[in-house]
Image (cartoon, rainbow, N blue to C red; front, side, top):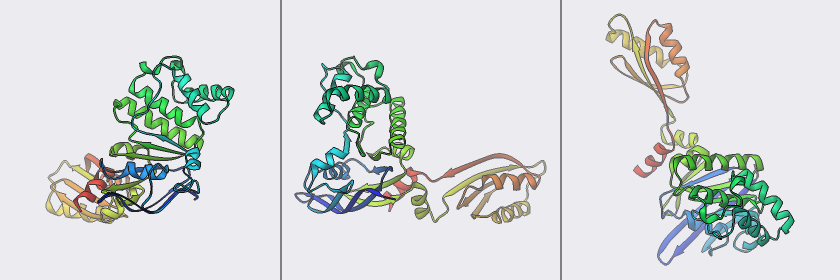
Amino acid sequence: MENCIEISGLTKKYGTHLAVDDLTLSIAKGEIFGLLGPNGAGKSTTILMLLGLTEVDSGHVKVCDIDATRHPLEVKRKVGYLPEDVGFYNDYSGLQNLVYIAQLNNIPIKQAKKDALLILEEVGLLDAKDKKVGTYSRGMRQRLGLAEVLIKEPEVIILDEPTLGLDPEGVRKFLQLIVELSRKKGITVLFSSHHLHQIQQVCDRVGIFVKGKLLAEGKISDLAEQLFSKNTFTTELGITDSKEITDTTLNEITEKISTIKNVAKVTSHGSHFSIESKSDVSGELSKLIVGLGYGISYLTKKEYGLDDIYHKHFQE
C-alpha cells in the first residue's frame, strides 16, 4: 500500500530538552492513524514539523511525497490542519468564514460559495450557515473547523486534540464524521490525542508516543498480541449443575476445555473458570459445556484493548 506520510529519524531539541527523539513512522494512504500519548509527549512538535512550521534538527519528513522541510508551502496545499482551538471571525456567519478561507486558498468566489454549501451540509451545519460564528457552540465551531479544512480538498487531515471541550455526544458525532469523511473521500487522517477510547474507536493503527519516543505502533490487536504472551482473549465462565460439582468433575471439565483449539491456559475456582486463548473461543466453549450436560450461569469475554496496552507500556 502506498504511504502518504513518511517520517525517518526525525529529531527536535529545544535547548537541552529532546522533544522528538529519532522518530520513524509510515502512514498509508487513506489510513486513520492515532498518535497517542500524554500531554508534553512531543505530538504537537511532530505535527509542526510535518507541516513545515518548525525546523527539523535531523531526519526527514515527506508528506504526499513532498519534503516538508524544503517545500512547506507545497505540503500546506495538500494538508488540512485542525488544532484543538480554531480561530474564526465571530462577526461573520459560518458561510462567510468558509467562503473567505476558500478565497485565501485561491478558489474563485462562485466556486467557493458552491463548495462551502456542500461542505456545510456534510458537517451538519447547513441550517446554521447564516448564524454568526460568535453564537456557535464549541461542537459547532469544531465542525466548522473541519469544514474549513475540507474546503481546500486536502489529501491529508491532521487533527491535534480536536475533541477537547466537547460533551460526550459532541465527541461521538465528531468522531463518526471523521471516519465517514475519510472512507468516503479516501483522506489520510493523523489523529493526535491523549484520549485512549477515542483513538480506539476510530483508528486503523496507533502509535504510543511518550517523552518524544515512539514506544510501539501497529494495529491494536497486534500490539495486544505482542504484549500479552499472544493470549489476547480472556473468557470468564461460570457453570451450574443439579448435583454437587466435585474436584474430579472440575478436572475433567478443565481437561476438555484445554482441548479447544487456541486455548492456552485454563484456571478454575470452584465452578468458575478463566480461559486464556489466542482467539475468541466463547462459541466453542458454550457448546462444550452444554454438551457435557451443564448449565452456564455467565460467559463473559475480554479482549485486551488500548487501555491495557498503554498501561502495560508505562509499567515497563
